[in-house]
Length: 372
Image (tube, rainbow, N blue to C red):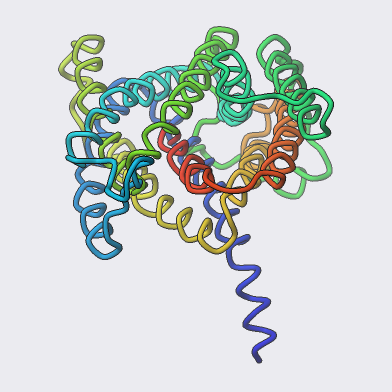
């Protein structure tokens, strides 16, 4: 009996993370659908961020009280390095939250012009961009002779090659296969969801998605300094979300001046905003914290490419004419580069000892804030 329970406990984190990635892809397809039917990406970002803040702020306060406030110890004394936690964390949030807003706005506009498979694929360029930025800013040292350093370089090159392939070569439509034929009748049902729309601005959308990933990479580097000051991830996510809400509303009001675009009705738009807020602000954060506590900081990133597989299967089964060879091949090339880079990072961190484990555990969690 104990053996069965232990095996179930081993399988549970894996199953939950796969469901999290599948849920993210599902919300991405829903987002593509409502935007293809006329919802402004700026309005969606503003409303979803606002509802997320309403949910996450009180939840993070409850979580913080139950767990206790974690403050980084000062290097010069045993006292906390934060004399005023709210002031210091707010300063950090103000400096980092533009990265959230920029990433979200560019990502959802890019999704509006392309398809979920491209959005899923390009989002996997974030580790490659973060690695390159760290080299440029000299925040990391690269050992060219080590296996881990070579793997990180190779993974970065493969990822960028895959991203370039996805954007520049869309390719022909993947025809019905033996895999999709048993489910072909599902494609004849009147579609409630849209995987790709006409016309598509593939190159422009791909460029916007690349800018979103680059912005998220810059943000992840800023987070490292924030985490060293303030070690509570839920509170940081709440403060980021609040500042992102204010900024996205300001940008939305400036760009989207049509008042009718801000009017919500009881349809899929309202449902999507509600699901995005609940899933992104509470469910995903709690699941990720639980998985990191049980499996370690690098358990979460290993599941990111699962989204590519889920998006490919969904396209093949439910959207028979929406999957293209170029985007499919490019996405899987990015996935290979992603895993190669992650392997190099894990190898490098295995050789390190001491003080940065807390940072590494929190960064993967907070990076999820820019996604749906």
